[in-house]
Length: 345
Image (tube, rainbow, N blue to C red):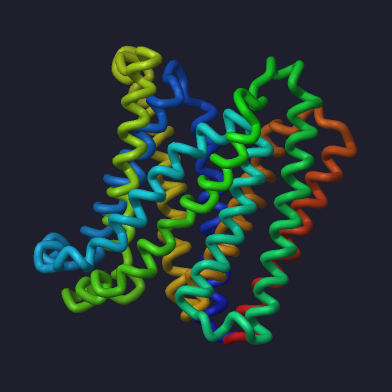
């Protein structure tokens, strides 16, 4: 295995840890509604941090953008728009079918579409090779792990529903919720294509003097700016509906809560940047394999952190065993993905 590929694998797993832990600071926000925190978090993570990072590493950034035709920007804008819709529908889906079931369905669909799709689009010649078959086996193992974990999560919700006053349970038509979950998992991987298809924009950044490892930052900035629009509109709608806009300023916790939302943004966007660097180091399989490792690491580390901070307290031994089986299957999927990459290069 080459040094570049090994570095890519490690970066993808660290990206998963960063992305899987970004939710933790949200637990310590005080006197804000969800939409208050989400608005500040998305503004920082999808507008401020992407453009700041791009400005720091790409010389003459805005000159590059002014000189770029719309065709250079279009892949990121379109992909970001659909990805932003998925961020909004995610909240709706978990409310309709429950947190555990929603997470499991969305993660399972995203694992398949975010790995198989880029493989077909960006490296179709690898699909029917031995490496491709190993890759599909890894995805199958990972999806099985997500399924087992999801069942354990649903059982955990049932066992702790009395203690938690029904939090996390399903509200609404389950069939409709399933459809929303499937659509969310599919659209939630759109940002991959915004990044991987913005090749002309990235080349323009490199021509302006950006290092190849960092030139993709401009693609992230464009993609996530488009995605922020859906989040902004939904948060404004929720603040009007719940009359929570005033809480942003009058809560007495503005600096504390903004700092926590900022730390969420750093963890989340840091994970995205590391995924991008991992994909760039793994060649044509990078967008596909990198995402598989990224999302597997996210599920793994998010669940372990949730367990450590007490989210599984009160669950039965049988449920905990199901949780551990799911995690072991996801780890096995990561191991098989690693083998596929090592075999390839």
